[in-house]
View 1: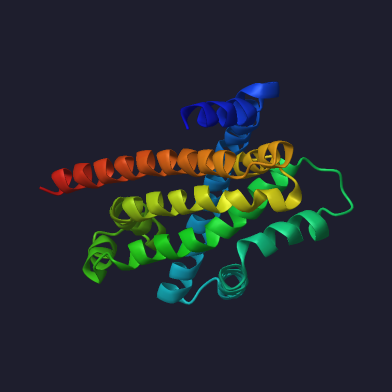
View 2: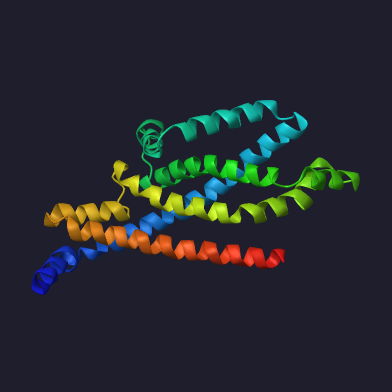
Length: 230
């Protein structure tokens, strides 16, 4: 039994340096996740500010309508379909790096969910905080920047971290555009060795390790935030 395991391990990972498919794929997955998170934060924060401003002041009506349409479309369609639309339709006639396509697609998708996270964080702050800022002579934007947003961001950090974990796992569909991410790397090994168990289990374990590490980071952040509240 041990001999069979050694032979399978050698065949799937050692022979022809097939382990590099996993390490290279992991690098692609982490790169996509990192930059998609940054785009998602930028989009999500902007959309949340626009929607909250419209709700409180009635301004930015057109921008709010655009943001609402964006949220409806992105949250109402599967991420893999969005990925293929970006790659095959929007950039179908343009030669562009597949990683950039994936980063844009996943960033736009994540931005829709982060927008609601930011907006819920803003709405969690008591109305009295806003009124107190205005009574001190702050403008609407100064009140939001100096009083509301610091508290809101602190409240949503754990939820945002969980969204990042979800995004990491969602990038596993990047192989639909032939991008050699971690999942695709495992699938390439499977196609070369005709052995599905070991490469796919390895991919699953790598994802599991990353998620467990991120979850520990989230719990550490939550504990730190609770200590600061005291």
